[in-house]
Image (cartoon, rainbow, N blue to C red):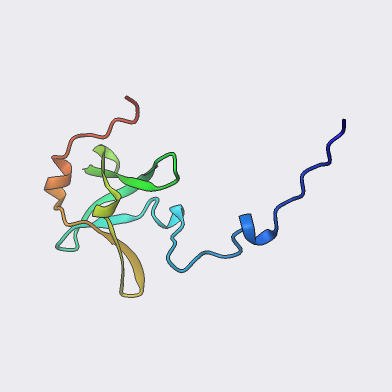
Length: 111
């Protein structure tokens, strides 16, 4: 018995026509500078951790080092990163100093 091809869902059910006002793109995060309490640079966002439900749970940050040498990756809870707008530009803040982040345990990419 032949079955008919499934009917595609209506456009409103699966498609997002524009970015919702409360959403950010992953590219809004990747490569961005992270600033600490005194607005000093404390690291750079290198990746986002996403669980199997699609929820962003953490942020991977490159800290320490100079010109990409001698640094390490650490990860913090997504809730510890605050997107703000300063001087008309988006910025990301954490309430941790460069020293605190540099002393954090390194992030392991695989178990």
